[in-house]
Amino acid sequence: MRESNIIAGMSRGGPYSHAVKSESNIYISGQTGLNSSNRTDFASQFDRSIENISMILRAYGKTASEISKLTVFLKRKDDFTEMNSLFAKHFPANPPARTTIVCSFVNDDVLVELDAIV
Image (cartoon, rainbow, N blue to C red):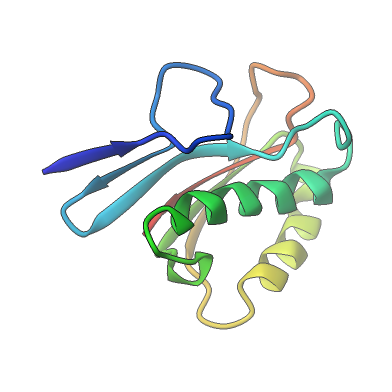
């Protein structure tokens, strides 16, 4: 059985669910941390992306510490070292599996996007 979830108060960039629960897994759609106050600050965007994922997980009674797999999409490869430091801050023990991809985004102000599987 598959159950979609759209979280009240969270924006979406298109017609998709913030998350889908299928069997025992939760698949979280890509979350950016872009807002009007952090257009160019990588750390703020990364932290906000994690906050968005955490908000989605709370709707399922879960926390970010339960993430099994996180995919990180970076606009600039030069942000990789900072991303590693931020990742370690958010996941100090038992970090999830991770894939990091350097790519471009539809919105040029987006510096990072994260999706997750719990």
